[in-house]
Image (tube, rainbow, N blue to C red; front, side, top):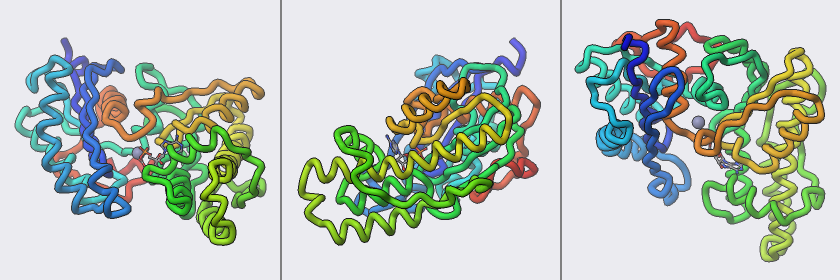
Length: 344
Ligand code: KG4
Ligand code: ZN
């Protein structure tokens, strides 16, 4: 067995999930485990970096041991160890990256510093060897961007959010409606029995030629609306209509801009990734759009849309296949964006 066939261990700790996965190249996931800290952060109303860091520290070693056992491999079977190096919360990233470096150093195998966004971008293609040219809509709690993906490692960001991410917009709107975290899922659920045309919420930058996003206006508009119409929150149908209308405003602008980006690119392939890719209306809307246009659509399987280490292990396999390993002196990059790959 050559070293490129050996299993890869990947660790993800960019926010509030500690995750570990083992992959057999090019794309067979042997194990993928997640230790969520969501409940611990819920009482603070958001992710507290120091709390995340302490929890990652406690979770990472047992989680890695369990991931290796579940995969049926020992550390000596590993060919490389990868970790998310950015973007994310510095104290959280440091834990996973330091652990992975120590592991790689002890075993004398390569270390790979990976971009979390690249993990999301590649997630719809997990298991395939080639990443075909396409337009990617990445929508998560921390990021919202349209990217031209020419192939693995070759990315140009065409537009991104200038303020809140789409998932953040869902979560903030949900909070204003008194719904529990993570609010995106709650809104999606309640919207099922609501009328998406009941209320009109603003959509920003809908003019041609602009592929950036902005969701802060929507949040403000929901706040004023709720202050003026408090009774709607007390009625089941009122809540359903509000949720459906908020979801329609967010999803509508995501679909509009994806359509424009694909048309401008001359490509006929779309991929959707990130936690918001689990949204029913977005999945259905994107499927309908792609069917109508004759475009190929790639969606991540449900467990791969939200943060996980399997997508990072898959990104690592692509890096390893082109001998792109990282120095053990490589620092974390909390602000790292895709498209400026020089930092690897
Ligand atoms: O990718 P992810 O797990 O973490 C980040 O990297 O941010 O995304 C989490 C986000 C949260 O904002 C959550 O509310 C949103 O994804 N989300 C959803 C749905 N499921 C998760 N938003 C709308 N509808 C959903 N079904
Ligand atoms: Zn993410």
